[in-house]
Length: 432
Ligand SMILES: [Zn+2]
Image: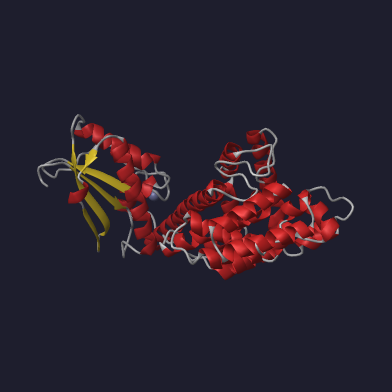
């Protein structure tokens, strides 16, 4: 190890103890960033010869590196650039020792992280600041930084899972009446590519919805709706732009939007995803939604869902949301949870379990309650006696009646999303 220069990372923690939970979490985050920074600058670090300790002197990391075409001064410059580019770089010490263990210095002095007026070394020598004051300031700033980092990682993870769920539903082939990889089902104006383009456009907003959940602290969750609607409308604009004015995913924008918001709210409060907690956030957010948006909207009904409500009284996606996704949790998830992986058979059975129990307003919009009940019955048969002939009979029925169970497809995507979030929670993806 002595024959190579070494890079080290430590933190400037005044007083004792030098480490605690906050400091260690922050240290790990810095270490991760530092490794990426050095690799990105094409500096070879010898990862299998690292020393990582946390003792009375605090958290410490040391790794030998190969100089290759770089001079030690150039590497020292990269160390300083890393410190300067990091939002809390003033807490961080990235040092370089040459192959004999001597510190490589650029001769520059760092400003004190607290007053930012004098060089740190002067404030330290003069004991210019009270240790307790310094420490509480530092821990507060680190805590805030780590919280934001955690939220960003969770927002990314949940966005990934939402996109995965939507693409899994779209890709499932064959499906009755719906767009899949080989058929446009009962749709003349869209195909698989339209859905891929649409998903691509709306998924860029998923992180925003999670962040709304993190930031929402009011007691009355219905107060979140105007902001969620605003994001939803922007998503719809982007969807129409991507599809040439075809409505592919209005339903899923609504349902997944609520789901992502609820996950943000839930995981902003703790590390664990709990189904009941998730449902109660959705319920509280959508309290009286049917009454406010459908009953009181009588006469001005414009959307498919509103027209169906006026005609038959079925509450569609809004009713499902107000119930805390009753169909998802009573029928979809119990079916999907039996499977250890998301294969075609598991997803098809999950779809059937949902469709057999859902008053799908997309079907009603093109037909009537008799056709809906006949469809639901065929779904039930296809699920109970799961074979190709029964499934093909269902597909043929949808073709003949020219119907598409788009509402059930949306609920399948939500079910897959919840299944994926539960799995991610089990794998500690939300614990940092
Ligand atoms: Zn100072």
